[in-house]
Amino acid sequence: GGIKDPVADAKKAGKQPKAAAPAQGKAPKAGAAPQPSDGQPGEGEASAPKEGTSGVKRKSNGRAGKKNLTNETVAVLKEWYDGHTEWPYPTQQEKVELAKKVSMSEETVNNWFINARKRLMNRSEKEKMIGSQIKKQKIAAETSKEPVIVAAQ
Image (cartoon, rainbow, N blue to C red; front, side):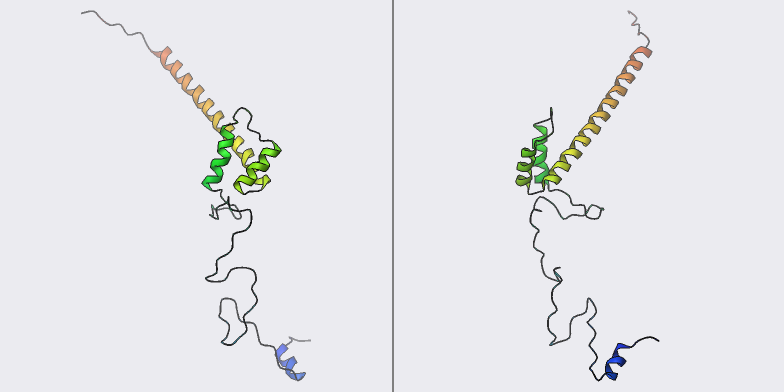
């Protein structure tokens, strides 16, 4: 067999060939029935916010699928964290309560705390390292100083 032509096959069978669907992006012909929605908002239509995403901005930061948390959400989580610096591990019940408060999943709240602890640990390690370098520099500067003799006049 060669290449099949559905229009020619339909004519041979004595049927009307089916009309091709309009290409995407083109308006349907006047009088045509509206096409069923694919669930995505069309031009001029606003999408309804998804349930449980009010604590998330729809701002892109260069990573596909990554959503940034709102300032309000971060403030609530950081407030809890700052109040528990001795043991920054919320209990399961606290995670549930925080998740409800900021309209996020427990998993997202848990991940935020994991990342926050890593950030804090990295920051404190860097501060310790910088602090010890400064101390070494001060000691080196003090030991290299020659005593200054002030002559009496």
